[in-house]
Image (cartoon, rainbow, N blue to C red):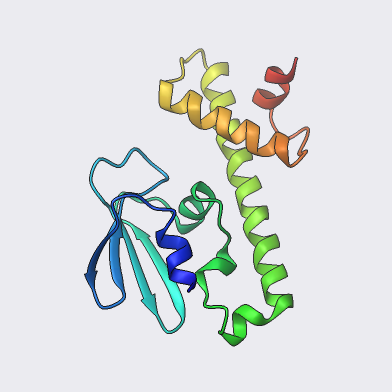
Amino acid sequence: MFLDKILSRLDKVKRTGDGQYIARCPSHDDKSPSLAITERDKKCLLHCFAGCSALDVLDSISLEMSDLFDDDDTVANDSDWKERSTARFQSQMIERAQHTLDITNNIIEAGGKLTEKEAIRANKAMKYLEERKVVGCSTWLNRRRK
């Protein structure tokens, strides 16, 4: 079942109702569960009460948007839809990583110092872009490569 695939990658999962769960959000340092997971109409809805997006949550557990839909669902079996969804997801994640590095660069150029959390986020973004061979996207990335 598609929901089991999602739940198995989360920590401190607790059932709160019919098709409803809560778990620690993998996208931020979650001390108490803040991620709501709801199964409805052969799809899974994710909501982080701390503000993380579904894209961030999925990226943190190495899943894609298409994983939020039951395999029996007509939309999920539409390979063209899956391809478009995956491409759109990857494009959004690359954009986010580039934006993170641009913000990091602005902080450094303004003479600021990165917090530990900002440095970790920048390094994750840099690694994400390097794995996908995205180049020339950020001064921060180019500076780190030298």
